[in-house]
Amino acid sequence: MSPLRSTDHVVVVGAGLAGWRFSEALRQQGFDGLITLIGDEHHPPYDRPPLSKNVLLGKWDVGHTLLATDELVASNEVKLRLGRSATALDVETTTVTLDNGDIVRGTYVVVATGTRARRLSFSAESAIHTIRTRDDLERLSETLAGLAPHSVIAIIGGGFIGAEAATALHTRGFEPLVLEVAERPLLGVLGADVSAWLESLAKDAGVELRSSQHIVDVSARDGGFVISFANGEELFAAAVIEGAGAVVNTEWLASSTLSIDNGVVVSRDLMAADRVGAIGDVAHFQWEGPTGVEPVRIEHWQVAVDHAAHLAHYLMTGASPAAPLIPYFWSDQYGKKIQVLGHPRPSDEVTMVHGSINDAKWVALYSRGGAVTGIVALSQPRALMLSKVLLDTPTNLDHALTLAPWAN
Ligand SMILES: Cc1cc2nc3c(=O)[nH]c(=O)nc-3n(C[C@H](O)[C@H](O)[C@H](O)COP(=O)(O)OP(=O)(O)OC[C@H]3O[C@@H](n4cnc5c(N)ncnc54)[C@H](O)[C@@H]3O)c2cc1C
Image 1 (cartoon, protein in one colour):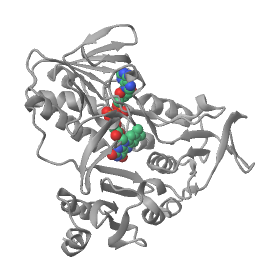
Image 2 (cartoon, helix red, strand yellow; image 1 turned 90 degrees about the horizontal axis):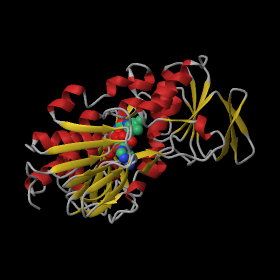
Image 3 (tube, helix red, strand yellow; image 1 turned 180 degrees about the vertical axis):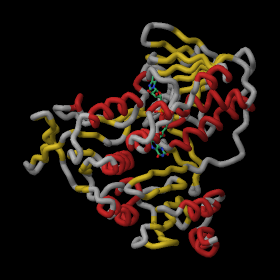
Image 4 (cartoon, protein in one colour; image 1 turned 90 degrees about the vertical axis):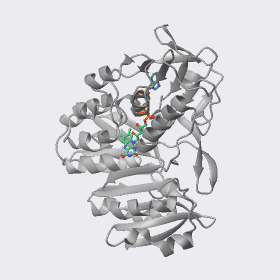
């Protein structure tokens, strides 16, 4: 790959975290050609994690999440085209078509279109809230402003977003009721052991969580909502929020020649074609993990940031960055901080190595075939970061237990 030149025009589609950080990284690495950043939201790039935390708590105005201030947009010389969806990509000519018929022709295109909230098809769908965008939060804030204290707010889904929403709403004096379809929240993400260790967090925080909840419909009634379950039971809530995961935004690429399979399939250097890359939540990439190269798509803030730096480096130098990507994720829920390093599978073996469940402070190692694949910590940020060394280079579980970096 020949490095980018001043005459190049890089068109970035998706004005979220990955698209913005990539544009910044290109400038930091010396690119002085044109950058156009296209986004379908009307807002300049902003950060999503605070939406379900400080914004929903009412501590931050939603504008506080802004990443691309006017000054940064100007100093980075990024041409923003907001409120416009890309509807097609011609890979050969690196040409993007917009929903108003405009054509934006670059010499390189970077796909950073992320994911959107998964919708469950219920009768009252249009009145059910999601927590994905600034506009979602503005709409939810309006609803909350009209509710009496202690109103029951049903949260469908006990995953990360659902738990964070419940935490914030409980703090604000509402009565969140978390309805989880699985036997336990996070069972399919963190596996049987760790999800069991986390099970009591909601209860300890005074939040009601019901597992194995099979909802068949949510309908509007008497100014609120009736939630109907498969067993015939019904429940009334003043408002309903869905936290049912995310769907990858690749429909606009259907007519392109890119390989689409649970995201845009890219190489180790995040390239989907000769002059097309993909980064962030939308990228299905080749990750060099502790047990070998595996195709993954990861919806983590830090992965989007690392992808942005990686692809900018690759396009500017033609070389891969030296540092390996170690996925990192955090979630603030029920008054605790869950942190995950690596990309463990729910079926991996789990060994608690530090702290105890009773204290709700611990560190656990995930391993597969004897190799450490991930580290999960509950409210032990220092011990977690000290343990990162176990993922910097592949480490055998027995050796990790001897090293015990978490205890330093
Ligand atoms: C409420 C919330 C809380 C979170 N909390 C955490 C957390 O605590 N820790 C953590 O690690 N991660 C967290 N995340 C995940 C993290 O925010 C994402 O991994 C990150 O935003 C991914 O960035 P991205 O740029 O790839 O995608 P996005 O942020 O989704 O940005 C993609 C952008 O592209 C736009 N777009 C889509 N299609 C088109 C199109 N055809 N044309 C033009 N534009 C388009 C989208 O509207 C969007 O603006 C959270 C996410 C949410 C929603």
